[in-house]
Length: 123
Picture (cartoon, rainbow, N blue to C red):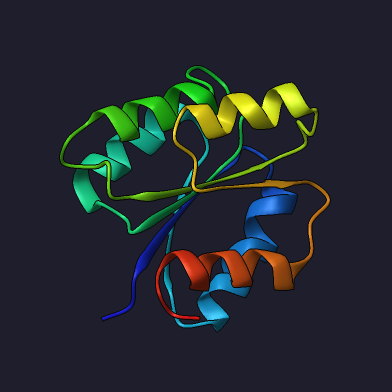
């Protein structure tokens, strides 16, 4: 059975190509456009990995990551921040909150797939 990957981003121009790319590599893709929606999907579907933007309506990506990592049933979910926030302070905060990887936009498709495969043990 294909691993589930949740994309959390409110920009369709990011989500649509990412969804296509990830499906082409054999994963099942779920999509959320807000922090609140991502928490609902995680509770219902428990994805193996979350691609998480920081700047989201409502609950931001930092809070979503913290919620995931503090929940004993979810802390094994891998989190990759995928964001335009590339300052070292932003990256440090993401990693302290428990992110497994941090990728800044613009990104390469190869970089995304490499991180996904490494974190899910498919490399």
